[in-house]
Image (cartoon, rainbow, N blue to C red; front, side, top):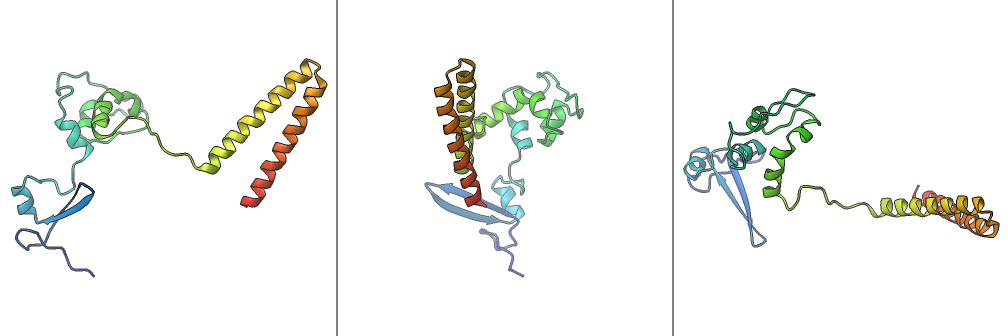
Length: 170
């Protein structure tokens, strides 16, 4: 079993561990509970969403409209107190309460994540294949059989390439 960390100030057992990154350098401080309170760090669990919601000034409590989630019954005051949502529908109900907090915490409020390259390749291939199938149907409807034969051949080539790619990945 590892030794407990000691407070950076008084050598008692540390219960609060702070990590700060400044100019790409990590600074760690371990504090006991009394030293943490003296320094103004009173919550050893860190800052929760509930803390941020209770300290925000975008709408003073009492002056805002009290919302209630129709699915789980969560109310604005409950959400502010706990910082947790009761169900998926709460995201829509409390959107106006959540949005300003998220805008302060993050660059944006929508996920701009990455798509795996293979999934993107597959998705683009499916879109091209569907475009060829649509073009084939239009060519047949217009009785442009030479064009239809060309689209048919392109579709077969693309479907064969997709099948080979799936076999090579398995």
